[in-house]
Length: 419
Image (spheres, rainbow, N blue to C red):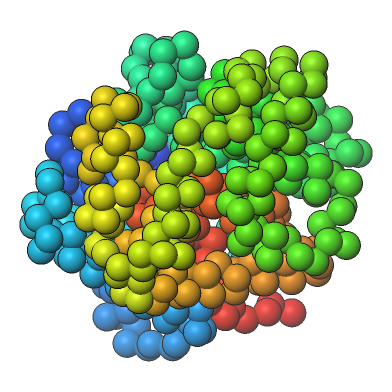
């Protein structure tokens, strides 16, 4: 007989695949309808909880300060959307802003609820999440290889572009995160031949997919994090979060070194696209990053509270690049979650984001040191704090934002220790 926890867990497992279907609907039919489909399961979880709460009439607060800091950050995200609407951002309307605002807060609340129902079964978090993300990958494999559907938001000919994701590069990040989880499972399965064989096969499949998606920066970050955890260097290296904060300045000064590394025969075979100008400018990203840093140093309009969602458009940071790349200026982005957050939400929103991410990092680092079940996610957390420096994977309303919200949600609740 199903109990309430089983219902919540089932809904949680299908939430990420349904998110993917919603992303496809948003790209092909209606952005607002797609967003509502993406969060439909999360809404069901919240309704189920509220009905259950009405029957029990027993409310116990189990969230900590991370929860309230996260809510404050999400409010700055929503505020930036309305600022952008008020400033007449092209292709922005009230319906789109309202639906995206709902999308920004609802999944996080549903994740908190899932943890509350699994308080006495905390090990479920790892298993259920791995299943859910694997299901999301599976429907994308079926869509791309079986049905011939590609990503309708962003795709490049000749490279794998999963259809049920919000962007081309989300596929690379998804398989990288799955493989970092698998690495932990492999370490624990060395004496179980059948399970080890399955895990190695899955790991190899994801490596192959990462190769054919061919996101060079995602590959480099994955390789770096993989080595960090495969050889347990992470237990001795305490400055990971601080290094991640300075990723962009480091990259901007290490372009030539990275080119020489990628020019080695091993990396040439892996990344395939090794061109001096392309690599040293990170496929043009360095121009976007440098102009944003110039705004931070010399212009500083909207520095405290931001310029609204897509604030680079209002600052006119990239009009020439839009012409060069044959796109509209408002459709460009800065290829960096942290820079987009700083420009859009100002120092206030950026500081909240940084504090929340640091608290999340500390939680999983502590769990990693204790070798608890949640330690499985520490490598994924390290990957995320680096990748959000050089990609919009974790920017507002994306798959990465939702994954980040899930990981933060676990750090936001105080669950009882079952003796």
